Amino acid sequence: MTSTFFQRIVFIILLIGLFPALRAQEYKYEIGGMTGGAFYMGDVNKNTPFKGLNPALGGVFRYNANFRWAIKANLMWARVSGSTDGLDNVFPGNAQASFDRNLFELGGQAEFNFFAYSDKFSYMNTKRFSPYILVGLGLTVAPGNGETFAGLNLPLGVGVKYKLKNRINLGCELSFRKLFGDNFDVTDDSNAILDDPYHIKGSILKNKDWYSLLLLSVTWDFGPRSKPCNNINSILGF
Image (cartoon, rainbow, N blue to C red; front, side, top):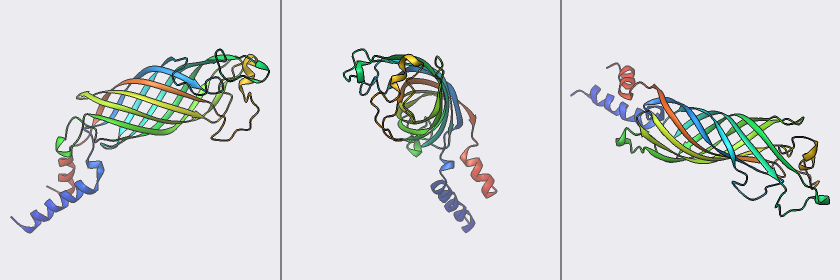
């Protein structure tokens, strides 16, 4: 064997170690649907997750950059509601209010898998199951009876994904959408008090509304990648 052969072997090892793009799933993309529930947290629900759970559904598209990182886009519909009935806090003048509204969301998130996610490439210590975290940015539009809410949201969340079989992925995700306003729960004059009911000056991190999504998803892989060995062969001229 010649020294050129050994040089090529060393170069291959360096490529595999230095370029994570070569450590990627068999397919680049996923597309599918999500369904589950949505709940609101704000002036009429300060501390109770899953209170007033309403339906949610949508579509999802994911680009798998490598085993660890993915970029996801979603288009969602959900219903949220809230009421002062049974609320421990009392509004000024013992005012009562409630709201119920639909929302539409277009968003994108970056996901980090804690395990190298794939049902193949076991020699790279991949797993067909992985928890993950996400962060991103989205746009929320919620029509009302004269008071339409439109604004950015900041998604933060956790989830798990499982590759059921080749091309089919199952997922479960809980995420919190931070809004940058206090009038998400205002749909008309009857609940206008929900926009800063205590007259406390807010900030970007204080006195803002949130909504959350608990979702189950099914996605299908497509867009096969060129096999790493073929990529290396073309680079080295084999």
